[in-house]
Image 1 (cartoon, rainbow, N blue to C red):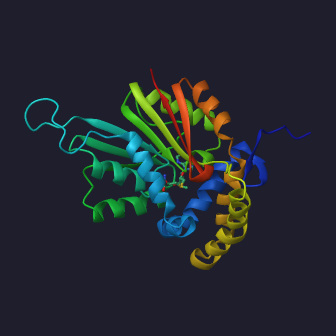
Image 2: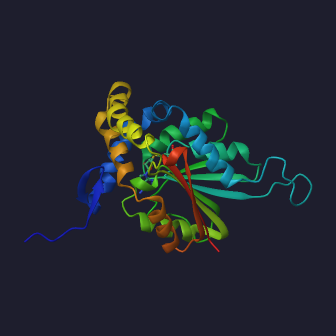
Image 3: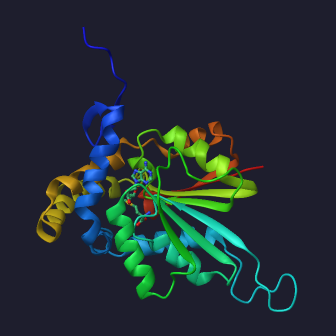
Length: 262
Ligand SMILES: C[S@@+](CC[C@H](N)C(=O)[O-])C[C@H]1O[C@@H](n2cnc3c(N)ncnc32)[C@H](O)[C@@H]1O
């Protein structure tokens, strides 16, 4: 008799937990070069506003911050998990002072390659570092970062609880964890419209623009499978975070979760 293997979901499909990561990696290898264009097309540019809200919550020390000796800049280390092509990292690095440094950690070399090219084009090579790594087993020491973010990444990670525990481990005491993720639409009328758009329009845009209907179908299906905001907040608490809260945005299309290491 075959040994039972722990199952999880990959979009609407049930797959062995150990197989999910390679399937996810295939999706992001396939979409990497078109990822940023597709983000704009699929969200109608809304992902920019959501990421701006995340930046406001990160609140890096501003460019004109003068903390210590004259002209010095307060050091601020951000880890952007599943940071892909660097969108969140660039926002934080550009808003922060000279002491701000962002590490983008992502499991996918193709997404990181696009991110490195974009960082060079923006003159941010010395402020943003791209590193390959798995959110479930981070290659960083305990208490290394002031803030850990993850945007539209956590639902792709097979063992969400491991990633949350790791985020907690690498945060300094007093540090903040912020997670931006698609959530559950809770506005009557908008839910049906959103469902129609997600399942009928997005895979078609994926097929037309990126020649890849299946990857975009996965991205939509994975949103539906992700825990509701209260349940996800409970998972963040279980990982050791305190003062956990969440804020739904755009009728619940996305939610911004926050927790502190205290
Ligand atoms: C939808 S993209 C989000 C990229 C970026 N954060 C953004 O908001 O534009 C999801 C990212 O999660 C990454 N990812 C998936 N599983 C991961 C894991 N176990 N560890 C680290 N990154 C992972 C993928 O490679 C991909 O770059």
